[in-house]
Length: 403
Ligand code: DNO
Ligand code: MN
Image (cartoon, rainbow, N blue to C red; front, side):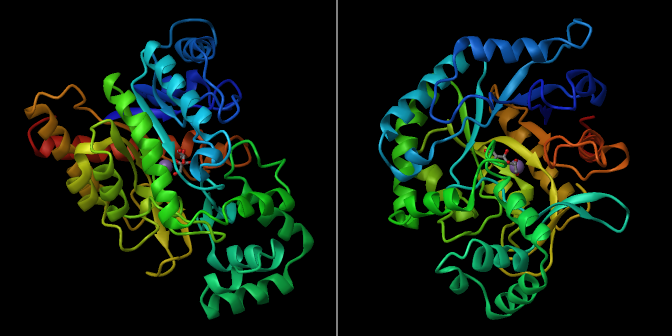
């Protein structure tokens, strides 16, 4: 695996110098300031490359921008709303500009409206660490009572609805506000701007978009962009739904192995690939991560390794972000499957033998606590995760005589 690290640009409290000390090999980044639907210009891309190439004192960092995460797909593309073709053209132009700058791997997602969704961003663990959590009853309290979405009640089992009603009745206004802010936080850049009215409008724009329609719209997008990426020898990789079940009445279509197998077959090109995020997919008890890696590994162009612990084996379920080796995904088994895939690629003489991997999210521990920054992206918690993952890889490689 190629050890990479997500960097949010100069606003990120974890610096390029910090990444060097973490011993990472490559950087994952995006031009977060460019509005969705607009072209990433060669100048904008070059500026981010320069920022990554230099340390605080101007000395070369030895690091390069290797993976794009994310090149956002607009709601217009997902709904085939007005202007969607222009947005696809802009997305394709961004691909060409990234290619010209030497970038080859591009992660994106196809989740309607919300990206990742959590109810708590700093949930206390018994150790004193903090982590992110998705609590189904809190989410139901938001959906049914705060957002007051008309059809919300029918999306939750009776016991969850009852618990949500109890919690909402006991909720003080500060917690209600924080809960809403945490939930919309997954909309990149929108955390402090999105009102409940905006959210209702966005949801309304999805009224005609059934699951089948969203799949068809996704295929239409892939049919346009995957051949371009293929010609450019680039690799697109779709991040799974996080969490991998429908929320707010919106369809979610990249949640299971079958979802991936279908979309990979629909546009059957190596460039049409997968970001295997073990934390997102692991929030469903019926997703077998090592098995998915073995069966879909050929198309896995990017890895997000993290772990979750679910409260129950139901879909949907509450869960929290556990330590990288601590949750319910068998991480050594997953890494063994990854190493097998890399060995297969090496035997086949493929150029992309080492799959870029980043420790996805970390708990806030030690000096991370209260430091701020992007939720889930603390320095020490991620470094601990990376160190553990490295250890597993080195141990397995040694046992196979490949250390
Ligand atoms: C969660 C994170 C996501 C991811 C985007 C990629 O698992 O990795 O926020 O960055 O969904 O498009
Ligand atoms: Mn992820």
